[in-house]
Image (tube, rainbow, N blue to C red; front, side):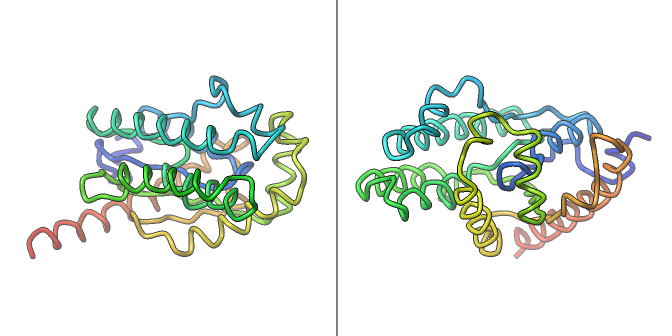
Length: 227
């Protein structure tokens, strides 16, 4: 019996990994995909034409960056659901508007016109009954010190050179965002409870929780359809 069957995780499940920079979303994505024999949907960072420019000038490039991310994530989301499931997704489409775009608007590094244009486009694409949401969102969380230590030891150079105040604000916004998120079921996991780089077997308790959450979610959906 493979791990997917052992923990009763349907082979068409779509699981999204969310959390602030530095929590290990990519590591979790690859570990879950390997354990479940699922495909991965990864954030396209290295081919992003705006990312490095953005870190040097937030105000000039924030709108361009957010539009690029929205388009790429929407295309990826569409591809996943057309393919038929069995995917682990690195970062959710919901974080873009709930955290990043709003943060730049609030801080004056995105104009009101740009923010309203972005928000209108996001709502038209995502916040509709026709947009297929994931079966489960896994939210990775930890202390601020743990997150900063990970950025300094594993992050990209442009992230290491970003002021601590930026990461502190993002950390707080992520906490507020996840406490109000309701687009799909959430499984919260603390990054201090496992070490996938040193202990590959630490994925199994996570898989057990994933299976439980997805089964609960699908039973709830079935009851709602019967009503």
